[in-house]
Image 1: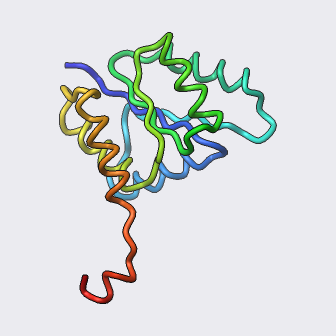
Image 2: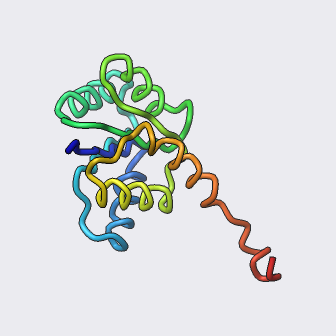
Length: 136
């Protein structure tokens, strides 16, 4: 059995608050870690924090970031050359909850199989709700 770690890396405390919101729905999370890029924090300091975290984790790791091309995304993607983890952008609450429930219910989850599922969930979680009023 291989643990699946989820790292949420975001600008500011977005990821911390997203995980707290998810815990209102799924209960206390395990094997979920946050990295927050704080205003004024250097690229080098964030890289050090990310390196320290990734080097401490055992098992498979999937990193969920908020914005493609931002510092959290760039740092975590660059670190894939040193650590064996996957990075997905587009972090949102429905996708995080779906991912967390999948890995918490199946400790043998394979992140290579999870990645396309997470991408699909991110896409499907955007809904133009006005259309739902018209019965579409």
